[in-house]
Length: 498
Image (tube, rainbow, N blue to C red; front, side, top):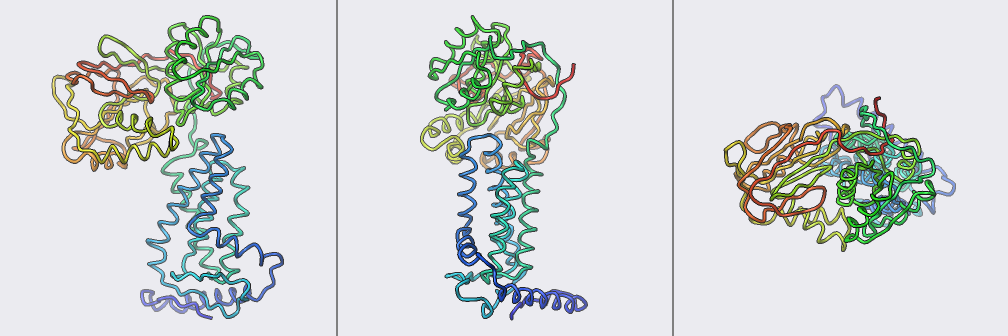
């Protein structure tokens, strides 16, 4: 039995111990190869082949995401992200660092061997790393889905020894690496459960045990039918109004005239329209997520109809800040973010491709297209000085993520605007990518971050695109951005303070 490893880099004192461990590993492989595994012959080789190139896990992620619950979708994405990191680590570091030969197949029955034997080095097992990474990533976001996936991941790892592709230690090392990759991903992008919600100011809001007095306006284009049906089942006396995108604002205005609580279901742009009408009529807002990103709803702690219904029944609500911008003698509000420069172009590309390929894929394609374009930086004037910028980001409240992406907020009534800029000198793609992966955005030649209560920009050319809450408009001249503290009442199942 061969268990050859290049030991030239190992100190002489450790070579004897390592040789004994490798010999024990090889003997354990022989025991497994000669042992009868009832029922495994039809299952494990097929399962091992199905995991080639991650096909099994991509299919599993698709099945999990197809349940259309927010936690399931996040679990699927986290599982694939963990798998990708584990696979990258195995292929770039693991197999190149430890050049261990594959097991000799003599003791493995022909019926158990793979039709195509791997030709890469043996340590660590890439299949085991991918399986463990996917299962651990899913479990960190959704323990229930993790429990469902874990037996499959264990079977894939076991199959690598059963078919003779790997020694047992290859599998154990790969699994450990995969679990580690999942925790690294969680460190980079914490799970929602890991984010400790802070207490927020309690707001007086009507408690509607059966939903009577709630008028929910739902944007049909967001695919909200299942969600509003679930809400109606939970709150049978709530009134549901489904409409087309161009009818949303008119229906919201009509609903406000007869509602005790104004509800809105759709993406961030639809929710923005609902907030504007709720503020105009001094009504509490009930938000049911129904779009691709749903930043505001998720930051409120509302993920589905059950969570919103529980908050409405109990009258659980909070006061939240609202951002406001004034340009060209008109004002609008934003609940999440406002951007100038590259990001509005990305939004337009995403909206163009989203109906054809879906929101997430459209966002990736839009970013690629926007970053490849030749462009001149946006020039704005602030505090009497002209500044070339590739992008300006203004958040309604401080966002947790350190890069340019919006990330999440744990506090919706903190007072400041979260202002981040990428300066306009040099190459835009390199500067944007550098800013996106930076640690805490500190002042530098490339990018800067500051928290302000009010921001005034002038000198904008006519037709300058401005994005807010997923919508894009054109502005010119002067734009003023400010905070309206704790002005909107919104239902939230999150903890709050009196």
